[in-house]
Amino acid sequence: MIGARRGPHAGYRRRVPARGDDNSLAAFLRARRARLMPAEVGLADGGRRRVPGLRREEVAMLAEMSVTYYVRLEQGRDRRPSGDVVEALGRALRLDDAGARHLRALAGLAPRSAAAPEPAGVREQLRRLLDRHVDVPAFVMDRLSGVLAANRLATALHPSYRPGRNLLRDAFLDPHARAGYDPGDLPELLRDGVATLRSARGGGAAGTEALVDELMASPEFAALWASHDVIEKRAGTQRFRHPDAGALELDAEVFEVSGAPGQRLVVLHAAPGSASEQRLRALAR
Image (cartoon, rainbow, N blue to C red; front, side, top):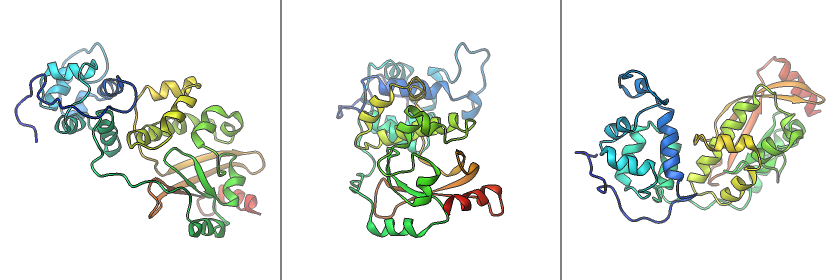
């Protein structure tokens, strides 16, 4: 817990360099502050605001630190806050677990627990399990949205669901892959994909910087990356436009692969009795 408000340097400690460019921490704080409304943190609106979101002094008050010190953080003049300060900022900005881990990484702080190394490939037992499930598309992906293994129905459903492909790279840079998604779903799919990548970056996933640099060729990606959203890969509903099967609406379930840090099993299935279920069966033949 943090008691009295801190002076300009009370939370400063020398740390290892933070990942990313020198202004990543400052940019993240500014972006998250701009997206948080006073009512969400129990504050009165306080009249007309020149810019959206909380004021700097409001964040400082919520984090129980001096306004001067918080301004230094947002301006990039202080880039190594202590763990206590980072936790206080996470609470003030209402960050979820993924956002809090990302903030620690930007501040140059070690994760709360050392991350286990990611395995080099998919276990043979899991590959066999994928192949036996012939009636639902299923694939395994890594933290950077790279596909590691997939069953036959997954590869038939979408061109990105093949080992060696990357869902993010395809979604931003491959017109053929983009055409396989329902156009109405694409904005949310891209936004969530970028937020998941930022979460992986905060967790120190190998290869993140190279992928980010490659995706910066897309103006869509650059704009979404600047928003500093952070989420974990999650379940949801995905709509597809298949050239042969037609329109399909499938529910996606996401499972952590036991004993394989960073790997996630994605299973897609249709509602019983739906047109999508019939079309998925036809695709599986």
